[in-house]
Image 1 (tube, one colour):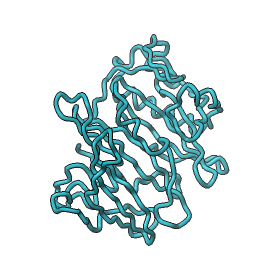
Image 2 (cartoon, helix red, strand yellow):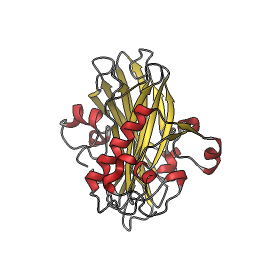
Image 3 (cartoon, helix red, strand yellow):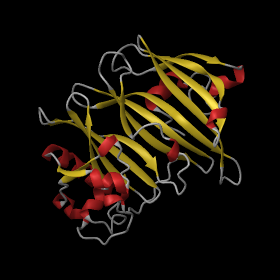
Length: 306
């Protein structure tokens, strides 16, 4: 995807969005040590003023703090120390959130924010063993001036579902995507947790796609894709198209069946069942005219070249 990621970085601590003065030179980033994280209520890391009042700031485990410092150092290397001028230590990490996840584990979400958008870094921590995932998973987001697509989200940014019917819940993480000026997507990424606490993406779902026409100001229609767990490692993805402001007038376009070979293994498209033949190419993602080439790749990896 052509994500617009500006070089200059802005502070997003406490939900504010204000430039700050440089306090720590780039060569002394090792002195930056994040110490706390927000315990996000209801697993929603878009903390409003009301929910922020209920949130708690909690100490960050040392192993998680070390990973966050490494992420910040890598971040500055990528954008260049000149571009990092104007930053203070906290701005390197954005906001850090903690979400409780199944089996007594915790998900730490690091929000690296750029002017037009940014990245979430996802880190899994097990308080019982004090172990942490070896590497962070990356999910992108875009900050839009309008919130039409963001207002259509089904769930908090972090949620859970048992895709395989094995009693183990996968992590669902929402990504906001923006392509040019005519399409906004809400994409749901589904992650299984491996034995080493690493996150393995097993499914991608373009949950809602908002389409605009010139002059690109008002959304006119939306694809909606609803997921149903069928059992036996099978999923059903129903796609409909509706006027943006009238979801009750949704027109069914058909459904696709997705399957996996077992727990922790990625899903792929097994079959498509369009209402009309022309609808087949949008049953899994927008404008999927790849003639089957994405049936294995897209569900597991998303649209890497959009």
